[in-house]
Amino acid sequence: MLKIAVAHENGMVSEHFGRSEGFKIFDAENNQILESETIANPGHRPRFLPNFLADRGVNVVISGGMGGGAVEIFNEKNIEVVLGASGNAKTAVENYLKGELKSTGSICNEHRFHDECGK
Image 1: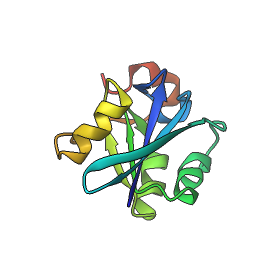
Image 2: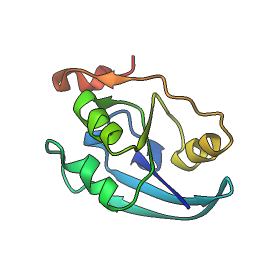
Image 3: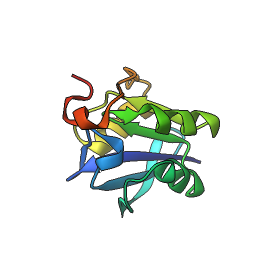
Image 4: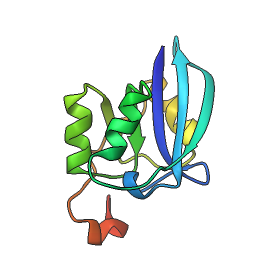
């Protein structure tokens, strides 16, 4: 079983992981989505969200952009990070499962410029 979390805003991939409305978590097996749940973002604070999602058993995280600290924590936990995604959250997961979604490495270095991440 693969658990894939997508940072989202109104069902669309969020441009900034930490400031997203919430996360859509998809359970997938044999490259098929079995079920999904939506959870609200419990709050953006240092080191919290990567550990929060890891504790939920997430294996892959998809987002438009993400700070380098969060990427590091996910890497330490062997959780794959796919950045630079956009569009519908479920479609992004389907594309990931087909091997068609590749990370562009869109890391946000300064939070005050978070609106410009990935541009």
